[in-house]
Image 1 (tube, helix red, strand yellow):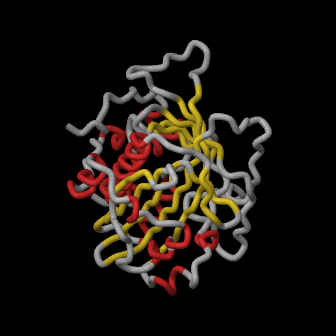
Image 2 (image 1 turned 60 degrees about the horizontal axis):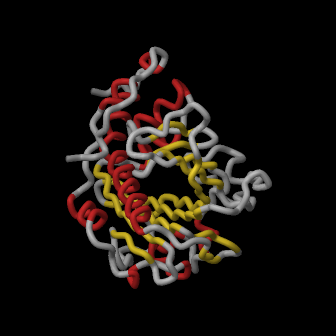
Length: 302
């Protein structure tokens, strides 16, 4: 049974007016079996995880030690990798997607359509459920490949490279607002605040899906005490292949980037590492199956 197809909240009368409203009810399909087997079973060997200095392997063709899996690293932090192939996705379609899904119209319905019942809002904060309750994510501090100190430019390492997004944030449980139900299953609210450092992006366009100024802003942490935070760093690379596009997503739970290095901030719960990885796999696969239909619809094709 696909646990990602849950009973959906009803759309408002205003949301039903969106030309894309019908896609909200498209079922979420399972990722390929070989991916699910890696993310629903036992953890991978931690020796196959990538350290900061190993991240060049993400940009080199066929160099990943493992395409899919999750583990607790020797230092107590979490690691996961998900590689998703999206047949039929072109660079033009991918660019269109990153303009489409963050649109705030109809109460962020496009973002909800991406993962119905799991995505709630792409505003500030971003809100989504990754398997253990909604997360509230403050999305500043997006970076590009240059934070990774690669020996060459990504296009020199792999001509099929499109772009890369790197982001660091931190999460903590948050009680629901007064009068707000916690929900079934004892769902936990979590709050994430992005790394507090401005990033210079003058040499290159901002990562797709990042609004002008968003990657350069310096967030304010004075109102966010350090106690209780769980850190998370994501590296996501997009490449073309013969017949479509692929994404390589690395998730480091309990880790921050400081001065061009990974820094351990927390020990982590193994189940949260696995659930983050599983959610990422469903997100990427959903993008790959939904985007061709959306793109045809948007361009008046049948």
